[in-house]
Structures are given as C-alpha cells and as structure tokens.
Amino acid sequence: YSFTRPPSSLTTASPPLLSSSFLSIPSSHISAVMKISSLSASLLLATFLLLSTSVSATNNITKLLQGFSDYSSFSSALTKYGVASEIDSRNTITVLCPSNSVFDSALASLGSNPSRQTVIDILSYHVLLDYYDLQKIKQITNGSVLVTTLFQTTGLASGNDGFVNITDVRGSPMVGLPTKGSNLTATIGKEITTVPYNISLLTIDSVLVPIGAAAPTKAPSPAPTKAPSPAPASSPTPASSPSSVPTPAVTPTPSAQSPASLSSPTPSSAPSSLSPASSSESPTGSAENSTSFAASVNVNNAFNALLVFLVGVVSIRGL
Image 1: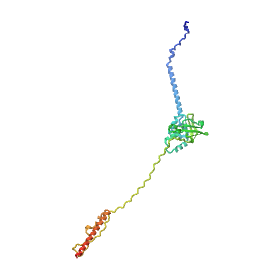
Image 2: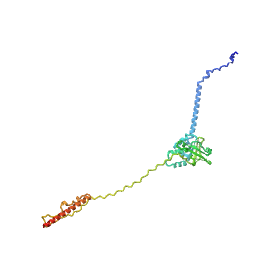
Image 3: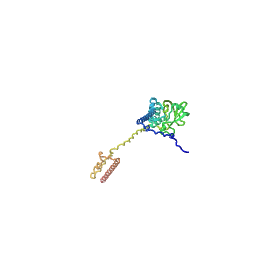
Image 4: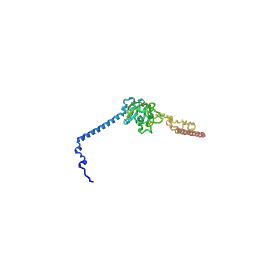
C-alpha cells in the first residue's frame, strides 16, 4: 500500500485571520457606552433612594396619627420618650393606640411622679413587631397567638414578659399578658390606618402594663414637722438675803463705883469699848457671824455684871 497525498483542493483551509480593522473601536463609541452605563447606575441609585424615602415616610408614626386628635396624648408621649423614632426605624409592625381619656387615666394611676423608664416600658409594650390588621387577626390559627413587642428588645423583660397574647373571643379580638391564666384586659377596636404588611394602627380600650415594667417612683414624702419644744420653766428666783443682819440691842449695865466714893454709889454706863457698833457700822455678814457676835456680847454683859457684884460685896464688907 502506498499513501497518496490528497489534492490540495481537498485540504481544509484555515480560517482567515480577522483584520485589525475589526478589532479597532472608535473612542467616541467607547465614550458613549461609558456615559450610558453611568446614567443607568444613577437611575438605579435614584430609584433605590426614592423607595427608601417612601418606606421611611410611611412609618412616620407622628404623621400617621396627626389627623386623629383622639390619640394626641399617646402620640405626644411616643415622641417625648423617644419611642416614635424606634417605630419609624422598623417595618412590619403594629401599634395599639389608646385614646386620650384612656391613656391619661392610666398615667394618672402611676402616681404624680412616674419614672421615665416606666413610661417607656409601657409605650414599648404597645408596639408589636409584626403586622396585624383585623383581617389577619381573624385568621389566627386556633384563635390565639403570642406576639413579640418592642419591650422585649429592651432586655428588661424576663422570659416571655415582653410578649402579648392576642385572642379572638367570639369574633371580638382581645389582648392581654402572655402569662397562662391571665385575663385578656383590653379589646382591639377599629383600624385607624394601615399600610398592608408594613404598619398597622389599631385602637385599644385599655392600657397594657407589662409585668417587668419599672416600678413607679413615689413622690418624696414631706419631712416631718417637729412640734415646737415648750419653753423651759423658769426656776423660782430665790429671795434676796437681807443686806444686813440686825444687831441685837444690848441693855446697858451699871458699872461699879470706885472705892473712894462710898456714900452714894450710882450706876454708870458700860465702858465705851464694850458698846456695840452703831447701826451704820453693823456687820452684813452671814447669820453664823451674827450669832457669834451676839454670844460675844452676852459674855461681856455677864462679865460686867459679875464685876459690879464683886465691887458691891467689897464695899459692904468695908462698911
């Protein structure tokens, strides 16, 4: 066998190489394509921002309740205590709104000075982290469901205290605490407004207070007023002691005559040295000094009397 090369006409021809003219693209075309791409990106970004703004405006709880004056107290409290901003930052939520009279009465029952955290806990307990309108409530499986509230996210709730129990009682939706056996204390009424599957505002005829809410702060009790102390009884003023103790009067005793004159003896006054001091010079000492002075005078009187007696005896014997 010999191998014969086929004719050249039967060989497979190689594909012609592309001309360089096909590979070159004008710069103007490239610039136009880049402009179109940039414009498309800008349109996509604008569409995204528009949708985001639309969702944010839909969840503005203050604006949604602005046209319903019966719920102005609740709306003002949401704004004052910062719960409104939490609602606005979320999607797929339900807000249970008590009327002015119901909400004001509930706040009054907390006392004159409830703590800020207590009010925040109560407001957060009325924000359900799921969308429920009346139609969806009627379709609840087995007629009852536990729903998470915003209060559960604060970390202050214990166990499932941050949930609410929604139950359809003979066609009337009611809500209460999640604890088994707890009474359903509030009735859900009508729809205020709804944005399907985004936000729903429902009326409620009673304020819900969660189990783990902070205890109300009692008003400080006034300080006890002390009864005025009675004035101390003044001690009786002691009677002033007499400025001077009266000196007892001394009866003058006759003195004996000298032996030279024996014819008519006459009594004479006692020597001046033995006379008591005048009233102006009377002592002002104590009663004890006065008694000592009186005793001294009596002794002098007795001595003078004895002297007179002896002189008389001598005179009689001389006769």
